[in-house]
Image (cartoon, rainbow, N blue to C red):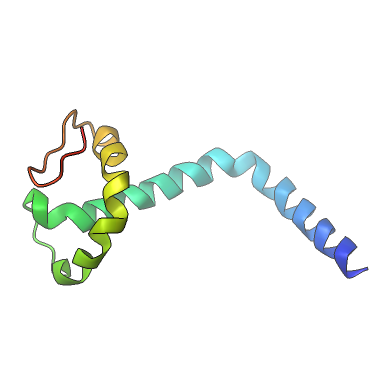
Length: 85
């Protein structure tokens, strides 16, 4: 009984989510872009008050940097310390 209820709830969520998938994906991408801008803002010359705390995230986010700078319209990496192209 509990398994059937979980399946019904999952189906209901899927039906509600279906028409809005592109909007959700666009919003998630915009949030990721803003986060990466905040992460790399100090390197781009924009003051970042939490720069010290974001240093720990660089190794994890370096793989996404290439896709981000291409989405932002920069053909090559704007940062001399990060070579991704």
